[in-house]
Each structure stands twice: as C-alpha cells, then as structure tokens.
Amino acid sequence: MNKSEKFWDRMAKYIDRVERKDEPTNIKIIEKTRNRLKISDNVLDYGCGTGTAAIEIASSVKKVKGIDISPKMIEAAKGKTVECKVKNIDFAQTTIFDEKLEKGSFDVILCFNLLHFVEDMPKVMQRINELLKPGGLIISATPCIRGTFLGVLLSPVSKIGLIPPIKSFKISELEDSIANGNFEIVETECLHQRSQQYFIAAKKK
Image 1 (cartoon, rainbow, N blue to C red):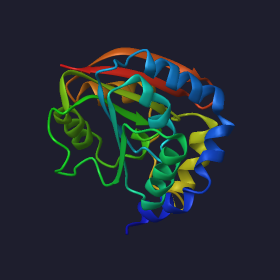
Image 2 (image 1 turned 135 degrees about the vertical axis):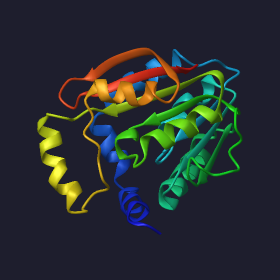
Image 3 (image 1 turned 135 degrees about the horizontal axis):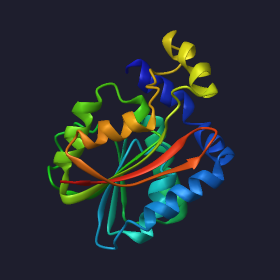
C-alpha cells in the first residue's frame, strides 16, 4: 500500500464529516450534475470516496461504477449502499487504469475533488477520454487554489508529505488540462468563492 492509499484509508472515517461542512456547495455539485445526466447513462465515479455522490445520482442513471484507491473508502461506500438499498451501484478498490474498465463503456465520468491530486494529468485525461463513449462527458468539481490563502496553507503541508501532493491550479490551467485531453469545455462555474471550487463539464470530441 502506497502513501496515498494509507492517507485516504486514514481519512475514510472523517471524510463524511468534512463533506458536511461544505454541504451547500456539495448540493450544488449534485444538482448541476443531475442536470447533465440521462436515465440511460452508465457512469464512472472516479475517486468515489465513501460513495456519497454515487448514491445521490443513482436514481438518475442506469448504473454507477465507483472506484477508489482506498479499501476503507470502498468498504464505507458498500456499507452505505446496503443501508440506502441502492441496487445499481458497484464499488471497487482499483485505479482508473484497471484493464477491467472497458474502453468506450461510460457515458459520464465524475471527478469530484480529485483532479488536484492527480500526479500525471495528461495520462489520466487520455485514459478518461478512452473510457468514454463518443460525445461522453467528464464532470469535475475541483478547487483551483493557486494564489488563495488555502493554497498558501496547503503547499508546505503537501511538500513535507503530511498530505498527498496537491496541484495548485488556476481555473484557466485546469480548463487547459481538460481541453488538451481532447475535450470541449461546455460549462464552467465557480460554486464557492473562498475555496475557488469550480464545476466543469466537458464533452469528448
């Protein structure tokens, strides 16, 4: 188990509490995501955490596949699914590069609070693109903390290894990184000014 897996395993018991602190923003993310979904969609929730978003959107789509590198996160997500009696979600502890994920098999890929932790953005965007069907969507919610107080605070903490490496994006840099993966940006909106949390939807070309 690498450092990132260990970190997110430790975070699994706290992550729901953290998400509740920013509940208004998370509600907006789910609402805007639902507006982009169809009942026939197969969705991949990449970096699904404890499964909150997957469970929230499950009734709006055909099927959700949730993946995360943390076994503890997946364990919690499966437990929630049983409690909520949701039948169309499958959770697995794995990475986006798992060969069991078939190319061109998803209509939508969700990346919530994830892209700023990605080590090799071009490689990940290429993989997301190949997993999507033609015209498929990537929907992300990402804090763009370059030049913010939060960015100044987290940068040294990240550098000394207390948390996984974080990319301090400007929104223009994040949009470019997504567009360079052969996507067309169709929507961008800042949902929280202080954390510079941006919602982006982009279509596979």
